[in-house]
Image 1 (cartoon, rainbow, N blue to C red):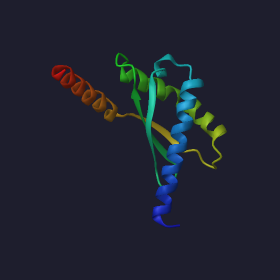
Image 2 (cartoon, rainbow, N blue to C red):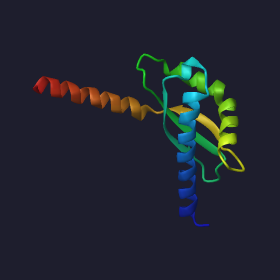
Image 3 (cartoon, rainbow, N blue to C red):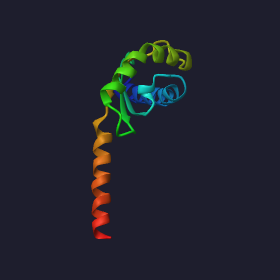
Image 4 (cartoon, rainbow, N blue to C red):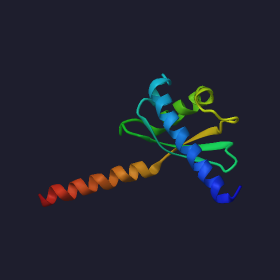
Length: 120
């Protein structure tokens, strides 16, 4: 199999995991610390054994550290649920990381709104 096909497969698996994680976090995980999380992207290694899950926090008052602790605590449960939903021989090991790009996007949006308000 060529390397480009491997990358495409890892990308497809990452997108599938992102979709399933979003649903699992919304419906299955009961930890209140995880309530305001959005999954922004999932990077899966070429061998499909590990997945780095990037998350953002929609509620600006939520502490990122608390959310990360909630996700870390729920990782085993989430992994089992993914195993039931995905038809894969091996489910990638999950690690969660805060996506700072989401914060940057909110910051840029705020600046643009302020500029628009000053001009208007």
